Length: 341
Image (cartoon, rainbow, N blue to C red; front, side):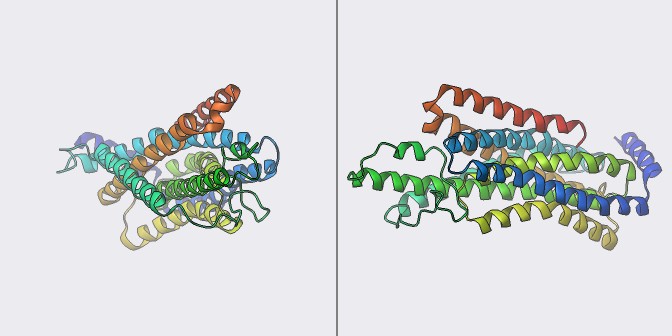
């Protein structure tokens, strides 16, 4: 273990250049910001383009399945391995209690259970208070105020008689419940992704290794595009107002650049770089927690909800196949990026 640490320290010393690293980080802030905007806004604009058209529900569902694949791959191929590597680093794993217990897996489990707890609490609250509210505001029905129809509900309303008020009320209550649930999923997903983005940004900001940062800038640009597409696909069908959509997109776009700036401030104030044991422990714990949240949201609230509980999915066999292909493409695209970032 000590020999491995010595080799790593020697290798890092040859690439350590604070001035060159700072220049690369400043460039990366602009690149990552604009690629994040492109990634997260693409599915939102695509959903808006198809809004009101016959294929709107189906196209939005396929976008969401692609997003689910990206989210799942992000958690299992990017976030969790990085967290494990941070806690397995020779500067950390040689000390108690980090060498005695698999903290990466344990904190990931805590993340899964925490996401489940939030899901259960929100679902219980919706069941208790989701009925009896007004339905005349049209928030989820694409009334031209920048909001979207809830996926999988519109087709159920076709063919219902105008006089059948009880059926209409029941459908509108289901619309409200599904809409609030989809919004909750998008918000929790953004929290998990923000954890991940902050960790990436702070780690790069604290690093003084120009050999590591240079290829990382390009890799993170593509990483943010696909991760943004994943989150944007969920935001696009959640029925948010235009202002909320813009706010969520902006928050995603600025999180990693802000993390880079924060990492640079931390280094200038403390001298800690990305190989400092305290920084590695924080990176590992937050990454593991984020991974658990994203695993739960990807599998339960995105994949299982759409493939097993979405009535629109079962109405057309070709749609289920197309959705599965989109899921596989999203997972594959994000997984390939693990070769570089």
